[in-house]
Amino acid sequence: MVIISLLLIMLSITLLRLAWRKKGLAFKVTKGCAWALVIVALALLSTTVGAEFGIAFGLMTFSITGFALVLINGDYQNSNKTASPHTSFQSTPFQNISIGNRPPINNTPDFKISDFKTPDLETSSHNSTLSYRVLQHRAALFIVTGPLALLATCLMALLMVNMMPAQLDTQMASAAFLFPCLYALTGYYLCAQQRPFKHALFLVACSGIAGAYLYL
Image 1 (spheres, rainbow, N blue to C red):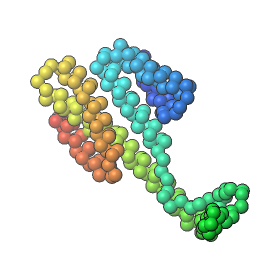
Image 2: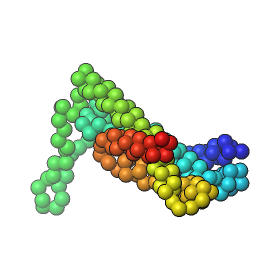
Image 3: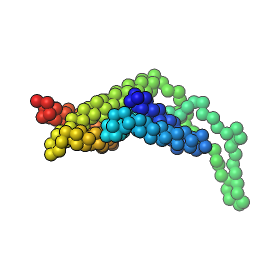
Image 4: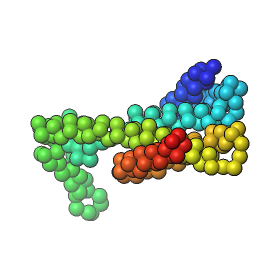
């Protein structure tokens, strides 16, 4: 039942991503059904593993699925694009247009021959290098905001609730709500940085300190 609930959440987030900002009755119905699936999945999780862990697992799956969809559909474009040699123009010929007694206006656009050059070998090599760098950037961003951030925020949440003057049940319930919020804030901060990879050492240090305090 837990796996079915998590799969329902993944399906609902995928449907929301496909129907987002699209007009039409079909897309509105799709978005409504997707949100209904989220509610049903959270209810099933809460019934199976309890309200605290069910909501926590549901929010984690919600965030990870959304992050994966954004990562897959990321749009990286080269700013130095060359014009396509097969650019289509209007079939009507350009001519000088005169309005009243004013002199004729030449509306013929000024094109450069360099705009219609086909990409040479150097440009193709640059594009392949750019693609490799894009893939490398995506992989590094996934590692930093994924496993490293998950491990660091999980251990830090356990460390925080361990210091609470409360019983074990209250501590675990607090950790179930604290961990998704802490991970969401950390992931948002890392994705907003231009160079999120420089925080990898800090995440590893937090994981090491919290893990050593909890288990040593």
